[in-house]
Length: 350
Image (cartoon, rainbow, N blue to C red; front, side, top):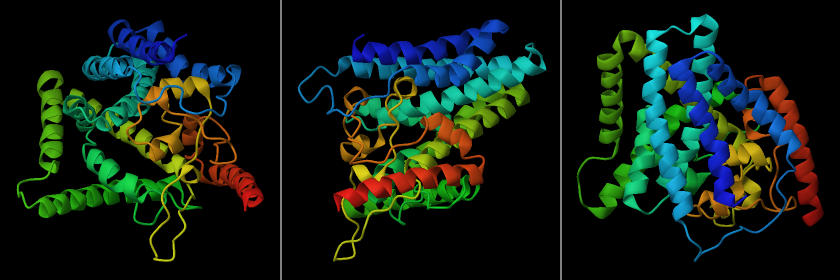
């Protein structure tokens, strides 16, 4: 199966199932839930892990299929956001069905929509970039665009990055620190750029805030107070998923300081990677995090898994590690063993 086609089948299937669940209810809700949870876990176990390789497609190859899929998934995100909010606000699924649809949609918005937005904000085409920006705004997380591009990619795996988790830090301590820190750091970076250019004017934060208020106003005007409450709940759930991803992917890793006190250039060793094929396709190769940091402009279908001797690997798929992060003691133990294995590998290279 051609690379982009496999991404399309695996990532569009849950969008269809969630949409059918929101409209028709019943078994479609449970099918979507199984797909995003037990189904993804089982497929990761059945499929052979990705092998060490260079990026399968390099510069000069067609880029339209990957961009077309990103746009299609972005459109699906906005359609599902409206369908799910409307369906949950009106009810009719029963208590169990309501909870299942809310949870499944939250997983989709947090894992798939976040991956789409992340992919698009790295595009140089302003139309694609803005589309990714508006996905984040619709999840009330617009500031992540500035924080990710202007702070995280510069300072990842250093104390100056709010979105890098320290060794031993629980997710419950990390999440509020990362949310507040990234909001302020992104704003400072935007203001510094304006001052450097000498152009004056407002930062993109005006659009982030006003856009978020616009989505909230639309939710309450169209679906009433229940729609607003549902929207805020889904946005919070999706934001939690994004923060979990950040938490896991740099947990406990740090760039060494050079003789001048500045951190060494970011490399494969500064991100945790997931070689698991199914969830990799579902999340547009977001678990191949080292190659993304090394080549931020590289499209998702071109990202590669670095050799095991060059980059640390997660002991389980990224969504499973994100779930484990809610149990700090268990997460620390599992990651301590993974870190010990990585330290041993690094020791053999020294």
